[in-house]
Image 1: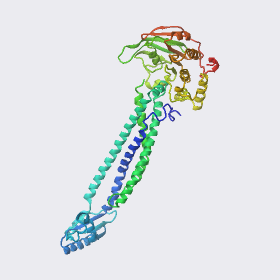
Image 2 (image 1 turned 90 degrees about the vertical axis):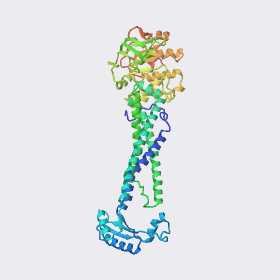
Image 3 (image 1 turned 60 degrees about the horizontal axis):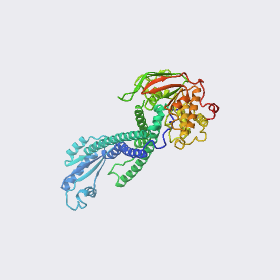
Image 4 (image 1 turned 60 degrees about the vertical axis):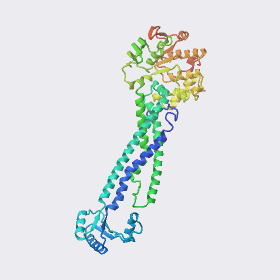
Length: 293
Length: 243
């Protein structure tokens, strides 16, 4: 029984700052957001990029319409015979105009500007296509047609993803360190305000772990309350954010769905917060009691 | 048995508060520690209830040299010592019952039902049966003193220490408390009562330990009141004349 149920000797709710669970809730909220960002970002970007990895765009910049159509036909014929190419589609002029509209205006067709012809290429899923060979064959059979497989853009996207993930985990670590520091200060304040009770317990022969027991029990409760509050806030925020992203439009932004690992981590956050506050409070009390005889 | 040998105590770099203190307390003996204010009574008591370690010398307690024990070993020794502090040192937010139950809960050897039973019996015995749930600030000085005494003896200590135990009560209550300590000693508890009140010291009897300027001038008398080995606490109310 000893050690499991703490010997109660502190006034209820007065051994710690009343704001500590609230501060822990805020810290766990930030921690949860950063953690979910770290865990979800890679999945979201990978999902987003996987659609692009199977795509390539052939661009034909030829001011002469007849020459452009000739290159188009040659490029289409070449691409259709290439292994791994699932589908090719020439983008109609109005689609190309729509794509250019944000930069050149809605009446780009009427402006008489030379508009490039675009061919959308879709590769078969799971097939690795030798882009060098595709480029070489296009150059030989349809000179003037250039293929872009988005590799450079995707590479930058992955670099950005890795950087954001590192930042997310750094934020998680910093928030946890800050939370531990808050618990240390809170526990020290509790010890200072209950110095007399601690001394009486000490003189009556209470072991350090017995004295620490009640402080760590209260820290555990603070951690649980704060962790639960932070997690609920985090879930509400993520739900609102995912609705917002959906509203902006599919394809433009990656969907921020809560994957399995992120959801599990988020649900474990209150327990983790409780464990962190418990261990920190115990360590603080034991260190402080070491100063007594 | 408790033995001090050439014990000295100084705080920081100051002069010695206690110098060359040597004495032996036989099991079940009764001692009255006297001396003027500043003589070192409180420091000697703090050494006895293991709140301080001596700067030099050795302190043998319950068969061990406690000056050589590791810090983690001391709580077990403290649980064998009951202390009645001059200012009671009760926890104001806890009831009289919970204050007295604390040593038993700390020891962790008894289930809560038995603890409650012992505490109720003991508090009834000291005349506080109807104040079980009263918090110390609502109790009179004498009542607080009795709660403090009950807390000190509930764990059947081998050594009972009392620092100016009658300093906060009226003469009539002082007399009753004095009788209580003497009776507790008769039940086999080695008892040391510190007081600067010479009249009280006379009325207690027992062996006299006189301190002056940090030195023990006299250790007089023998083993004090007769011992009754293994006597249970709480004792029968009749033993204390209906205190």
